[in-house]
Image 1 (cartoon, rainbow, N blue to C red):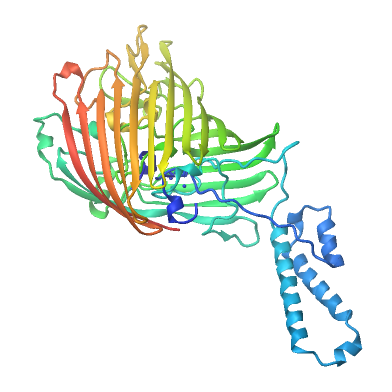
Image 2 (cartoon, rainbow, N blue to C red; image 1 turned 180 degrees about the horizontal axis):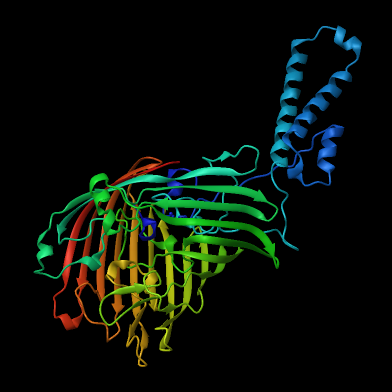
Length: 560
């Protein structure tokens, strides 16, 4: 079960079972299935007790930072205070019999003293807060993925909250102040094609074959796989500049080179894929604002993972933007609002006059003149979550003999999730872009942002290809254990006129997902889903629209 981006860490994002639901992120993933895909936001309280005794006063007034005072020092506070209490008792009093009431009183005083010392130890283990100039430091929002990935049904409205002071299932690394937590889940998906013969790994409607195609007659295929299962860990370390948060996550949805196809056939094995590997630091004051820096690979700052629906299908609604990107991201938080900018891996992608897909991985003719630049504004509250993001790209192709062409691309996304009632959420996204093909899943067969013709000649030309779409979903919780989501999506792709038409191209796609999910335990989900897709072909092919219908069942068992 996953949101479109959760086929990766959504991350899909609270406390008890009901608070976790919306829904990364995760969060990571951000964090449904995302958000941080959103993430579980947990606050922490601090107390400031005063402990008597000279040794305790030394610890409290020391010029060294509180974290430099060890637990052993706090233990000596207990010994010193207890010793001074005993020595202060006159010898005559020791010779007198002690009444039961006095015994109970001493026990109560000793218990209170132990509690105070324990509080002092907890206080000394935390870093000293660093307030922003002139005002309290606001709470920083979590990075794209807080847990890996956000739990199914997790609440997206956790956006705008900081990484937890200590994850509930974490343990303290020996000899350090770093908390470590294992992340991930075991996910099984089984699918049966009822109409059409579509890829059973995910509902990729761009693969729908034309009516009359021999492969289309192979309806009824059944397959099961665990490609979406994930494993990873995260660490949280307090520092004087806020929390240092790291995530390392993998899944099994990597590509399958043909020489290794036998491995998938015999052992059901699939290649590991790096999804989220990043570190973030913050909040720290910069110019009077709560700031956070993130470096590594996670969900692109351009995509809107918190506002995607919960689906059993790993792909989710057709062509909703989703991408893992190496990036450097800077975030500023003001209460329940956040603004972030990022520089991300550009990796040029283009399509030639034929139908082949090319990218930096298999073609050296592309020159990335600058990183992709993104900007995002988010707001969250009891009402829900909203986001507006933008992207700018630059593309150039050269044959090495002085013949080159370039083009510029851009994209925008607007999304929101609203709480209609305690048991209902309504969400959706709209998007449009030119040259944003790499940020669109491969539902279109060959979703390239740019197209090139005349390569190797003085007449070489580069053009952008447009992508647009809209997605709407409604989630209803029937009871504490049962929930359903209905998701609808319509997406279009405009191909450059000189790109040769082919059946694997899809100028328009329509999908719908309807599921029922049962959650008997807080970390266990079982569900069934009916998935429908319709594909239009390019007009030059004179082919009627074709559709597909698939039934999916799945389970997800979280590690913690």
